[in-house]
Length: 492
Image (cartoon, rainbow, N blue to C red; front, side):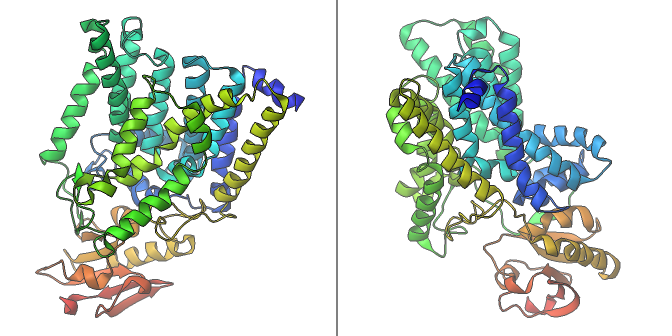
C-alpha cells in the first residue's frame, strides 16, 4: 500500500499511466503472433498507409478528410522498413498509452484534480472494456480524443478565457482534432458552443474569444460539404456494393444490419452495448454528476446521439454505436468526482474499496485483453469483439487470403469483377491487380444476397469463405485453406 501511495504522489504518474496502458494494449499483439489485432487495422489502416498518398483507399473508408492518423503512420513506416504488420503492432500500444496518459494529464494538470484521484480515475478509464475496444482498432478516434484531452489540458477546460492567453496553441490543437476524426470534432464543438452560449448569457465574452476556434469550424464545414458533394480523387478499383444515402442520418429499420431483425434487434443491440459503456462506472458517475460547462455538454450530446434510435429508429443519427462507445469518457470523469464524494481520500476503508474496485476492473481488463474472458454478446458482437486477440479475419486464414489474391492476379481475365466480403477489403486493396474491379460486400449479406445487387457486363468472380456463400451457385477455381476463388457468373 505504501508503494502505491508513493506512486500516487509522484510526478512520474503520466509515465506510469502510459506504461500500464501500453502494456495492457500490447498483450493481444504479443499473443497474436506476427499479425496485428483489430478489425480496421487489416481492413483499413494497412491498405491506407501502404497506398498513401493515393487517397482512393481513404475515400473508400470515408477517412479522406480526416487523415492525420494515416499521415503519422506513414511517417512512422520509415522505421518499420516497410513491414506494415510490425508498424501496427508497435503503434497501437503506444497510441493507447498516449490516449490514457493524455486523459490523466487533463485531470491532473488541466482541471487540477488531486493527484491520487487523477491517477485512480485514469486507471478506471484505461481498464474499461469499452475504452479498450476503442484502442483495439480505432486509431483515428484515439488520436482525436488524445489531442482533445491535451487541448482541455492547455485551456484548463475553459476554451474562451484561455483563448485570449494561448490563441495559437488552441487554434492549432483544435484544427488537429478536426483533422483526426469527425466525431471527436463534434464533441469539441459541443463543449465550445455550450461555453459560448453561457458566456453570451453572462455577457462575459469578446470576439477574440471565439476567433481561436474559427479555423477548426471552417475546416469542419468543408468536411461536411465534402460529404454532400463528390470531389474528384484518384481512380480506385474498389467500391462498396451498397452505399449509404446520407452520412448524417440513417434509417436503421430499412438498412442493414437491422432491416431483417427489425426494431427488436436494434433495441437488443443498444441494450447490449450499454452493458459495456454504462454499467462499469454508472454508480460512481451518478454520485459525481453535476451540470458543469465541460463534460455535461459532451454527456448530453452522446446520450442523444446514442439513444435517439430508440425513439426515432427510421431517422436516427448515424453511427449510434460509436457515440455509445464514447459515453465512458464523460461518465469516467463523473466517476472520478464520485470517488471524491465517496470519501476515498478521507477514509482508509473507503480507499481500500476503491483500490479493490480497480483491482477487479484490472482482472476483467486483463482477461478481455488476452481473450481469456469473453465479453461479446451475440447482438453486440459486430461492434464489440469478444476479446482483443482477434482481427478482421482469423489469423490462420491470412496467408491463404493472400494466396487467393495472388492466384487471381495470375489467372483472372483483364477487367474482371470480384466480390469480396468487407473483412477482405484490405487485402483486395493491397494485393490485387489494379485492373480488377473489386466490389466490397457488407458482413450482413451472404454472397447469394450480394449477387442480387450486381448486374455486370463481364464475368463475375468471388473470393470468399464457404460459411458466407449462402446458396449461391459457384464454380470453384482454386482453394487455399478455407478460402475459395469462385466463378459466380451463372448466378446472375
